[in-house]
Amino acid sequence: MAAGPTLGTAVSRIRAVRTGPARAALDVFAIRILAAGLAYAAQVLMARLIGGAEYGVFATTWVWVAILGHTATLGLSQGACRFLPALQARGEFSEARGFLRAAASLTVLAGLAVAALGLVIVNLDTALAAGPYGTPLVIAALVLPLFALQDLCEGVARSQNWAVLAIGPPYLLRQGLIMAAMAAAILLGAPGEAWVALACTLVATGIAATVQGLLLLRRLRRSLPPGPRRYRWRAWLSACLPIAATDLAGAAFSFVDVVILGLLMPPEAVGVYFAATRIQQFVLFVHYAASAATAQRFSAAQALGDRAALARLVAAQTRATCAATLLVGLAVVAAGPPLLGLFGPDFAASLTPLAILVAGSVAASLFGPGEDLLTMLGGERLCAAITLGLLGVAAGACALLIPWFGVTGAALAMAAATTLRGLAMALAARAVHGLATPVWSGLTARTQP
Image (cartoon, rainbow, N blue to C red; front, side, top):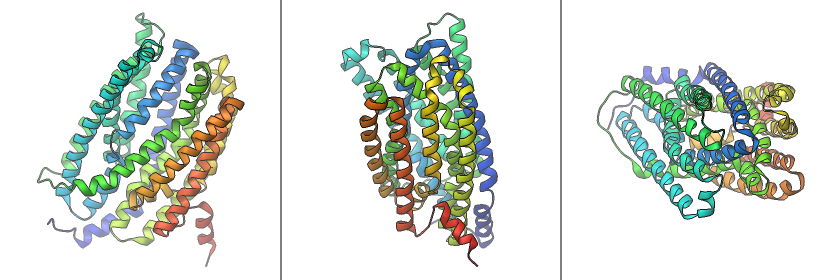
């Protein structure tokens, strides 16, 4: 058995848990804001170059890449944030090395399997293959394994608190390459169609994933030198597969509105709504930044038995996330008209769903990081069940409201479901771990003598 960390090492790691999240969160948020700007510019460029209908086809196809790509990691991306900090804090380096090897192998295999299954389905459905989605779906199947591998790299980098390496390549480099490739393709005479946008995305994802993987391997060799590997397949998969179910449900939850819109409304309507969700990403990045900076620290604090540090982290994250979400949300809604105007005159209708979606994000932020606690500290099965249940609520509400209210109905359904999900996660985290996550809990505790 590997020797445990010395007392001095343990103390230094506890201090690392207590300090640094705010700086890390700011780094992540700054990069994600810059990335959101690039993503926004890329979406505007695509909408202008390929038109509303083709943009709707691209949006629907990309949604499936995101949903299935996140799921293809089998939960090991989030599992890296849960297991690696705890293993390193306890000095169990052979198991940490084993986890890294197993995670990479399984992610590549799962990504290829899902892509192959998708190609089979497209080929069997002749109407789908011959329609506007046929060629884009084939190219999307090629993107999917690369997307999954990059998602795993992001999780591993986050587990080591390497925030810039975690999110820089997928959200800065990839977006920049997509824009450059798209502009070059059109200038060289490529048609303004969705499959061209997906082909540019394939090239950009391949380059970004390769760069991130090489940089990550170099840094891991310094922090985790070569040595024996220990594999605990049952323990890892028993925790990560429910996380994968949560990721699948979470990804589906994030995009179920777009999927149902694609089934019930014409591509032009999907494009209008998708433009609103792209601008809403500025608000969602607040929660992402806070989670990327603190989720793995929850795990480390729990492994080191520092319950007080854990409670302080939870309270600090909740307060900061809620305040930042409100401020960014107000700014996004205020800037909505000119931002949407860049997409084209047909996208003015995106403002109402944008405001509704932002309101739902602000309401959900009031309930704190319940999902992170369940994923990092235990309770992943309950987390998955909650997400699946609220996914059903969101899908049902979308199916009910979209025929009556169109894109506004989709936004109302998602805002309500997002708020309910935040509440349910907070209640579950309190029940499982005894930690109060809503913002008013932390404010009450601060006012008590």
